[in-house]
Each structure stands twice: as structure tokens, then as C-alpha cells.
Length: 315
Image 1: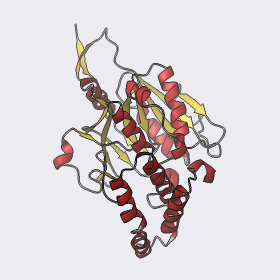
Image 2 (image 1 turned 60 degrees about the horizontal axis):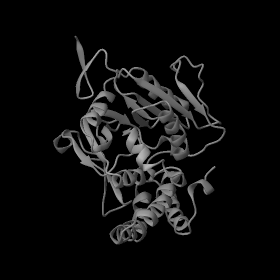
Image 3 (image 1 turned 135 degrees about the horizontal axis):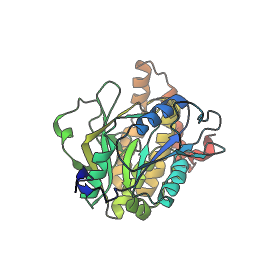
Image 4 (image 1 turned 90 degrees about the vertical axis):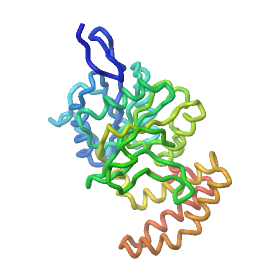
């Protein structure tokens, strides 16, 4: 009987590969979302169900657009629910459909046909791994993320390999601390064990929170370097140093610390993100960004310490 290599083993024609539900949250300009969906339509994994959560009533997707793949499931919200709530809605639906794996994708990802199968193979082969993530490049071909690490430094975390050329240590699979939510494949069992995204984060830092809850349940995060994607970061909030992103990251860093903080993490936050804020102001001004990002970060820190939540201050 003929067979095909899939999921790290030989599967015969009579065997059914795991069901992957790919979840894309739409917000903002429809063009990047449609481009991502076109890429998903070309993915060569044989059992893929695509769920789109249309979370932008003001700029909804036009499902009559010729570039919108037909037959895919769309969940439409009546208002911007925030990223975390939108993902939870899509994840609930994916699990209801019986998905074995749930693929979270930012709408500004560009994907090749073969990026998904290596992630499924990795999770099928390693029962300790609850999540798998690819090597993500920026549009210039440099590394945006080879997974993430918790660190003693700015913003509590860092993206592995950020700004470097691919190669070297980033060519080998290894366990990492977490994956940014831009592109990560979660095992359904690990999602059920850890529970949904904490919706009070709204957006940013929720991926770290989820990774720690998965780790508590015994699941690890596995970096798979032979899977790849391209990411243009933070388009939904206006770019990497936008005021919205700086505010939300600062606000949610405080929330994260209140939940998970150790003396070392609090000391890191105080040293780099609070006491280091004047230097950050100066750096942003010298780079031509003006004081806006610094003001937004300072306001986010203060609001976080006061216990404010992102959903209370965003539309």
C-alpha cells in the first residue's frame, strides 16, 4: 500500500491526518488579511480548516472580493472585542470542530506552501511539546523571531535572534520560553489544559501568560527552524514604536508582573522600564520619533500600577 510522509511518520492512505484549524483575526486594513488568507489557501497540508474572526466593523472583510477564498468559516463581531477575546471566540469554535491543533496567525503574516507540515510533524513526534513555532523573518530577510525568552532586561522578554541573519544556532530545534502570537501552532490538549487567553490583556503580553500556564501543565514550546514565515510587525497598532503599542505593552507588563512577577522580574522592570525611561525618551527623540512613544509608555506604566485594564481605555 502506498503511503506519504506526514506528521513525522508514514501515514497510509487509509489513515486520517490530524485536523488543524488556522485562526486569523482581522482588524485594520483588509489588504494584509486577504494576502494572508490567499497564502493559507496555498498551504499544502491536507486537512486544514480556516477560521476568520472579523473583528473590525468599520473596515470589514469583503467576502465577495475575488481574492477571498470561498467556503471558509467567518465569525463576525459587532464591535472591536480586542485580540484576546477574538482569539478565544475562534479557538472555542476550532475545538468544537474537533481540531487536533490550533494555528494562531497574525493577519500580516506571509506564508509558504510548506510551512505548516513541519510544525505538525514536530508536535506529533514530541508529546512534551504543547506548542511549536517557526523561524519568522522580517521583510528584509533578517530574523524577527526564533521564539522568545524571559530575560533580565527591557520589557521583561526578548525575541530570539531579532535583527540577525538566519543561520548558526537558529538552525537547530530547541525548547524556548514562549512563542509570540504572530505564528504558533498549539496542541488542542495544551489549550484545554491551560485555558483561554486572559482577555483583560486585550492585546500584548497574553502570549507570555499563556506560555507560563502551559508550562505549569507540563507542556513545552518547541522551536522548529525548518518552518518559516515572514512578518511585518504591529500593523494593527501602527508599527513597532507606535503610541498604542508602547502604551499597551507597558500597561500589560505591570499586569503580567502582578500575576507572575518574581523579585528579579520586578527589579528588571524597575531598572530598565521605569528608571530607564528618560534614556528611552532621548533615544526616541534622536531617532526622530518624538516624545510620543515615551509619554505613552509612561502613561501605560502608571495606568497599570493603578489597576486599569486595556479594554477600559481603548475603543
